[in-house]
Length: 282
View 1 (cartoon, rainbow, N blue to C red):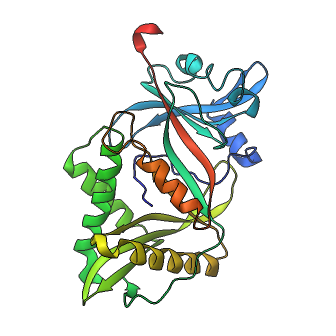
View 2 (cartoon, rainbow, N blue to C red; view 1 turned 120 degrees about the vertical axis):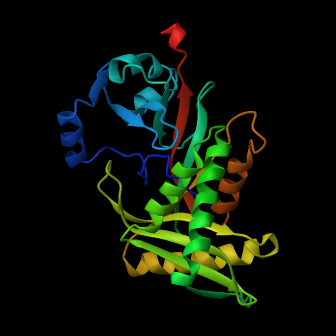
């Protein structure tokens, strides 16, 4: 499970927006109507790639299902965010959208953590001695997410994004040790909120295990420990999976990860779908 700094910082199910969110969106001019149905959309600048997007954080269910399948939303993007290069849509994750929509991110919530058998691995909190390794792993996760979407960013920007996560006051990083050496991490952000619903959660921002032969047991150990931390905070544990762009080497990999996670007690809460905009046709 991984996350990138380039996605919207929201999770949990795409239900009806809370009153505080709607008030703020209305004050920002982000509330729209399409055939009488509510749409909340505004400008989103990708912090790593710089792409200007029309971020649709909420669209009424009637606009997402048949017969339109969100097909009318891209045509409204110029009115909502003039000059946007793409539309990024928060979707409840029930069914797929037709091309050229592509699944970009899937958010999941852990409902039941699996029992972790003894593995001989050691788990501890990160210390000052781990800073270099963890920052490198965070940067690797961000780079992997960018490559999956067939985009890129300057190395300095990727490093800065990794540092921003490391420097968060609510960050907790757990490190897996094998044979006396750190081999992976799980980094949590303990104080996240979904702006749309107003709900708090613990964000499993990234897990990464550098030794492939240990990836399964080490990841299971990290997730179990993360679930325990979230339970202590009385918050759900949420993570996300980045999906590879069509035609990329990793196409379909994200879907396989989601299938594996749902078999281990995770449930999809919602997704983000991406739709490029051809400025010549608008």
